[in-house]
Image (tube, rainbow, N blue to C red):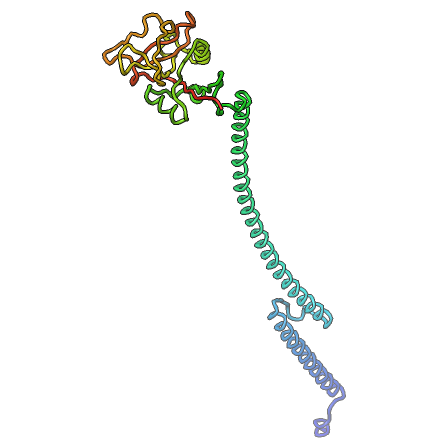
Length: 292
Protein backbone atom coordinates (compact mmCIF):
# COMPACT_ATOMS: atom_id res chain seq x y z
CA UNK A 1 0.00 0.00 0.00
CA UNK A 2 2.78 2.30 0.93
CA UNK A 3 4.62 1.67 -2.37
CA UNK A 4 1.56 2.40 -4.33
CA UNK A 5 1.08 5.62 -2.43
CA UNK A 6 4.61 6.83 -3.18
CA UNK A 7 4.28 6.30 -6.85
CA UNK A 8 0.94 7.96 -7.14
CA UNK A 9 0.72 11.74 -7.99
CA UNK A 10 -2.17 13.74 -6.67
CA UNK A 11 -4.39 15.61 -9.20
CA UNK A 12 -3.89 18.87 -7.24
CA UNK A 13 -0.15 18.62 -7.64
CA UNK A 14 -0.38 18.12 -11.39
CA UNK A 15 -2.67 21.13 -11.77
CA UNK A 16 -0.27 23.29 -9.77
CA UNK A 17 2.66 22.19 -11.91
CA UNK A 18 0.84 23.06 -15.14
CA UNK A 19 -0.15 26.43 -13.84
CA UNK A 20 3.38 27.21 -12.80
CA UNK A 21 4.71 26.25 -16.21
CA UNK A 22 2.07 28.31 -17.97
CA UNK A 23 2.88 31.27 -15.76
CA UNK A 24 6.58 30.98 -16.40
CA UNK A 25 5.98 30.76 -20.13
CA UNK A 26 3.83 33.87 -20.03
CA UNK A 27 6.48 35.76 -18.08
CA UNK A 28 9.11 34.71 -20.57
CA UNK A 29 6.98 35.91 -23.51
CA UNK A 30 6.28 39.21 -21.78
CA UNK A 31 9.96 39.75 -21.11
CA UNK A 32 10.82 39.05 -24.71
CA UNK A 33 8.14 41.51 -25.88
CA UNK A 34 9.41 44.23 -23.58
CA UNK A 35 12.97 43.64 -24.67
CA UNK A 36 11.99 43.78 -28.36
CA UNK A 37 10.04 46.99 -27.83
CA UNK A 38 12.95 48.51 -25.98
CA UNK A 39 15.30 47.53 -28.79
CA UNK A 40 13.09 49.08 -31.45
CA UNK A 41 12.56 52.21 -29.42
CA UNK A 42 16.30 52.53 -28.85
CA UNK A 43 17.05 52.15 -32.55
CA UNK A 44 14.30 54.62 -33.47
CA UNK A 45 15.56 57.08 -30.87
CA UNK A 46 19.10 56.80 -32.18
CA UNK A 47 17.93 57.62 -35.71
CA UNK A 48 16.14 60.80 -34.62
CA UNK A 49 18.80 61.77 -32.10
CA UNK A 50 21.33 62.01 -34.92
CA UNK A 51 18.90 64.39 -36.67
CA UNK A 52 18.77 66.67 -33.63
CA UNK A 53 15.67 65.23 -31.95
CA UNK A 54 15.65 63.88 -28.40
CA UNK A 55 13.04 61.26 -27.58
CA UNK A 56 12.37 59.14 -24.55
CA UNK A 57 12.44 55.42 -25.01
CA UNK A 58 8.99 54.17 -25.72
CA UNK A 59 7.42 57.69 -25.69
CA UNK A 60 7.79 58.88 -29.31
CA UNK A 61 5.98 57.60 -32.38
CA UNK A 62 6.17 59.12 -35.90
CA UNK A 63 4.49 57.92 -39.04
CA UNK A 64 5.93 57.63 -42.52
CA UNK A 65 3.77 60.50 -43.79
CA UNK A 66 5.05 62.78 -41.03
CA UNK A 67 8.64 61.92 -41.92
CA UNK A 68 7.89 62.68 -45.57
CA UNK A 69 6.32 66.02 -44.62
CA UNK A 70 9.32 66.93 -42.48
CA UNK A 71 11.69 66.05 -45.30
CA UNK A 72 9.64 68.13 -47.75
CA UNK A 73 9.64 71.08 -45.38
CA UNK A 74 13.37 70.73 -44.93
CA UNK A 75 13.85 70.72 -48.70
CA UNK A 76 11.60 73.78 -48.93
CA UNK A 77 13.64 75.59 -46.30
CA UNK A 78 16.86 74.69 -48.11
CA UNK A 79 15.35 75.98 -51.35
CA UNK A 80 14.13 79.19 -49.68
CA UNK A 81 17.54 79.68 -48.07
CA UNK A 82 19.15 79.46 -51.50
CA UNK A 83 16.62 81.97 -52.85
CA UNK A 84 17.36 84.33 -49.97
CA UNK A 85 21.11 84.05 -50.59
CA UNK A 86 20.49 84.70 -54.30
CA UNK A 87 18.27 87.70 -53.51
CA UNK A 88 20.90 89.07 -51.13
CA UNK A 89 23.61 88.77 -53.78
CA UNK A 90 21.35 90.45 -56.33
CA UNK A 91 20.57 93.23 -53.84
CA UNK A 92 24.30 93.76 -53.28
CA UNK A 93 24.89 93.98 -57.02
CA UNK A 94 21.96 96.40 -57.39
CA UNK A 95 23.38 98.55 -54.59
CA UNK A 96 26.79 98.57 -56.24
CA UNK A 97 25.20 99.59 -59.54
CA UNK A 98 23.24 102.34 -57.78
CA UNK A 99 26.37 103.65 -56.02
CA UNK A 100 28.28 103.62 -59.30
CA UNK A 101 25.44 105.45 -61.03
CA UNK A 102 25.32 107.96 -58.15
CA UNK A 103 29.06 108.60 -58.51
CA UNK A 104 28.66 109.09 -62.26
CA UNK A 105 25.83 111.56 -61.68
CA UNK A 106 27.95 113.40 -59.11
CA UNK A 107 30.82 113.68 -61.60
CA UNK A 108 28.44 114.86 -64.30
CA UNK A 109 27.03 117.51 -61.94
CA UNK A 110 30.54 118.72 -61.11
CA UNK A 111 31.36 118.87 -64.82
CA UNK A 112 28.16 120.77 -65.54
CA UNK A 113 28.98 123.18 -62.71
CA UNK A 114 32.40 123.85 -64.24
CA UNK A 115 30.79 124.46 -67.63
CA UNK A 116 28.12 126.66 -66.02
CA UNK A 117 30.76 128.72 -64.21
CA UNK A 118 32.57 129.15 -67.50
CA UNK A 119 29.37 130.36 -69.14
CA UNK A 120 28.76 132.80 -66.28
CA UNK A 121 32.25 134.25 -66.71
CA UNK A 122 31.64 134.60 -70.44
CA UNK A 123 28.32 136.31 -69.72
CA UNK A 124 30.03 138.77 -67.36
CA UNK A 125 32.70 139.44 -69.98
CA UNK A 126 30.05 140.03 -72.62
CA UNK A 127 28.15 142.36 -70.28
CA UNK A 128 31.32 144.34 -69.68
CA UNK A 129 31.98 144.52 -73.41
CA UNK A 130 28.37 145.55 -73.99
CA UNK A 131 28.68 148.37 -71.45
CA UNK A 132 31.93 149.49 -73.03
CA UNK A 133 30.41 149.42 -76.51
CA UNK A 134 27.38 151.37 -75.35
CA UNK A 135 29.68 153.92 -73.76
CA UNK A 136 31.65 154.15 -76.99
CA UNK A 137 28.44 154.57 -78.97
CA UNK A 138 27.31 157.36 -76.66
CA UNK A 139 30.70 159.02 -76.99
CA UNK A 140 30.64 158.66 -80.76
CA UNK A 141 27.10 160.00 -80.91
CA UNK A 142 28.16 162.94 -78.74
CA UNK A 143 31.06 163.76 -81.05
CA UNK A 144 29.32 162.52 -84.23
CA UNK A 145 32.16 160.06 -84.66
CA UNK A 146 34.68 162.85 -85.13
CA UNK A 147 36.58 162.03 -81.91
CA UNK A 148 37.80 158.86 -80.25
CA UNK A 149 35.70 157.32 -77.46
CA UNK A 150 36.26 159.19 -74.20
CA UNK A 151 37.26 162.40 -75.95
CA UNK A 152 35.28 165.67 -76.09
CA UNK A 153 34.82 167.81 -79.18
CA UNK A 154 35.00 171.59 -79.42
CA UNK A 155 34.93 173.29 -82.79
CA UNK A 156 37.48 171.43 -84.90
CA UNK A 157 39.48 169.81 -82.08
CA UNK A 158 39.10 166.77 -79.81
CA UNK A 159 40.17 166.92 -76.15
CA UNK A 160 41.18 164.22 -73.72
CA UNK A 161 40.91 165.07 -70.02
CA UNK A 162 42.92 162.49 -68.07
CA UNK A 163 40.74 162.64 -64.94
CA UNK A 164 37.85 161.22 -66.99
CA UNK A 165 39.84 158.01 -67.47
CA UNK A 166 41.30 157.87 -63.95
CA UNK A 167 40.65 160.06 -60.93
CA UNK A 168 43.75 158.81 -59.13
CA UNK A 169 46.45 158.88 -61.79
CA UNK A 170 48.53 162.04 -61.99
CA UNK A 171 51.82 162.81 -63.76
CA UNK A 172 54.46 165.50 -64.08
CA UNK A 173 54.63 167.68 -67.20
CA UNK A 174 57.07 165.56 -69.31
CA UNK A 175 55.21 162.32 -68.57
CA UNK A 176 51.85 163.96 -69.29
CA UNK A 177 53.09 165.10 -72.69
CA UNK A 178 54.46 161.62 -73.41
CA UNK A 179 51.03 160.16 -72.68
CA UNK A 180 49.36 162.59 -75.10
CA UNK A 181 51.89 161.73 -77.82
CA UNK A 182 51.19 158.02 -77.28
CA UNK A 183 47.54 158.80 -78.04
CA UNK A 184 48.42 160.50 -81.32
CA UNK A 185 48.01 163.99 -79.87
CA UNK A 186 49.87 166.53 -77.71
CA UNK A 187 49.24 168.73 -74.69
CA UNK A 188 46.49 171.27 -75.36
CA UNK A 189 47.36 174.56 -77.05
CA UNK A 190 44.85 177.30 -76.17
CA UNK A 191 44.55 179.64 -79.14
CA UNK A 192 41.71 181.97 -78.17
CA UNK A 193 39.34 183.11 -75.46
CA UNK A 194 36.56 180.69 -76.45
CA UNK A 195 38.91 177.72 -76.16
CA UNK A 196 40.19 179.13 -72.85
CA UNK A 197 36.63 179.13 -71.47
CA UNK A 198 35.97 175.62 -72.81
CA UNK A 199 39.04 174.14 -71.12
CA UNK A 200 38.43 176.04 -67.88
CA UNK A 201 34.79 174.97 -67.65
CA UNK A 202 35.65 171.37 -68.57
CA UNK A 203 38.05 171.01 -65.64
CA UNK A 204 35.63 172.60 -63.15
CA UNK A 205 34.81 169.14 -61.70
CA UNK A 206 38.47 168.67 -60.75
CA UNK A 207 38.37 171.61 -58.33
CA UNK A 208 38.10 169.67 -55.06
CA UNK A 209 40.45 171.71 -52.84
CA UNK A 210 40.73 175.44 -51.97
CA UNK A 211 44.26 175.54 -53.42
CA UNK A 212 44.03 176.49 -57.08
CA UNK A 213 47.41 175.07 -57.92
CA UNK A 214 46.19 171.58 -56.82
CA UNK A 215 43.10 171.79 -59.03
CA UNK A 216 44.87 172.46 -62.31
CA UNK A 217 45.86 170.43 -65.37
CA UNK A 218 49.02 170.57 -67.45
CA UNK A 219 48.79 172.46 -70.75
CA UNK A 220 51.30 172.72 -73.60
CA UNK A 221 52.93 175.97 -72.46
CA UNK A 222 56.51 176.36 -71.16
CA UNK A 223 59.38 178.85 -70.76
CA UNK A 224 62.15 176.30 -70.47
CA UNK A 225 64.08 177.80 -73.38
CA UNK A 226 64.04 181.39 -72.13
CA UNK A 227 62.87 182.38 -68.69
CA UNK A 228 59.83 184.60 -68.91
CA UNK A 229 59.18 183.86 -72.58
CA UNK A 230 56.22 181.45 -72.66
CA UNK A 231 55.96 179.39 -75.79
CA UNK A 232 53.32 176.83 -76.79
CA UNK A 233 54.49 173.42 -77.93
CA UNK A 234 53.54 174.37 -81.49
CA UNK A 235 56.26 177.06 -81.26
CA UNK A 236 53.76 179.92 -80.94
CA UNK A 237 54.80 182.49 -78.34
CA UNK A 238 52.08 183.44 -75.86
CA UNK A 239 51.71 187.20 -75.68
CA UNK A 240 48.35 187.38 -73.90
CA UNK A 241 48.87 188.20 -70.22
CA UNK A 242 45.31 188.50 -68.95
CA UNK A 243 44.84 184.75 -68.46
CA UNK A 244 47.51 184.55 -65.75
CA UNK A 245 46.35 184.62 -62.13
CA UNK A 246 47.42 187.55 -60.02
CA UNK A 247 51.13 187.26 -59.22
CA UNK A 248 51.68 184.61 -61.89
CA UNK A 249 53.90 183.44 -63.40
CA UNK A 250 56.32 183.80 -60.48
CA UNK A 251 58.98 181.12 -61.11
CA UNK A 252 58.74 180.13 -57.45
CA UNK A 253 61.41 177.97 -55.80
CA UNK A 254 65.08 177.22 -56.29
CA UNK A 255 64.46 175.06 -59.35
CA UNK A 256 61.90 177.48 -60.73
CA UNK A 257 58.53 176.86 -62.36
CA UNK A 258 58.69 176.54 -66.12
CA UNK A 259 55.52 174.70 -67.18
CA UNK A 260 52.01 176.10 -67.62
CA UNK A 261 48.92 174.93 -65.71
CA UNK A 262 45.27 175.74 -66.40
CA UNK A 263 42.73 175.75 -63.56
CA UNK A 264 39.17 176.80 -62.79
CA UNK A 265 38.65 179.63 -60.31
CA UNK A 266 35.44 181.03 -58.91
CA UNK A 267 36.95 184.49 -58.26
CA UNK A 268 37.81 185.28 -61.85
CA UNK A 269 37.10 182.78 -64.66
CA UNK A 270 39.43 184.77 -66.91
CA UNK A 271 42.48 184.34 -64.75
CA UNK A 272 43.02 180.60 -64.97
CA UNK A 273 46.76 180.02 -65.50
CA UNK A 274 49.80 179.71 -63.29
CA UNK A 275 53.25 178.18 -63.59
CA UNK A 276 54.50 175.06 -61.80
CA UNK A 277 57.55 172.86 -61.36
CA UNK A 278 57.66 170.66 -64.44
CA UNK A 279 59.09 167.61 -62.66
CA UNK A 280 57.87 167.83 -59.07
CA UNK A 281 54.20 168.69 -59.45
CA UNK A 282 51.88 165.74 -60.11
CA UNK A 283 48.67 166.80 -61.87
CA UNK A 284 46.02 165.76 -64.37
CA UNK A 285 46.63 166.71 -68.00
CA UNK A 286 44.71 167.62 -71.14
CA UNK A 287 45.52 166.42 -74.65
CA UNK A 288 44.34 167.90 -77.97
CA UNK A 289 44.18 166.61 -81.52
CA UNK A 290 42.32 167.64 -84.70
CA UNK A 291 38.85 166.15 -85.14
CA UNK A 292 38.15 163.81 -88.06
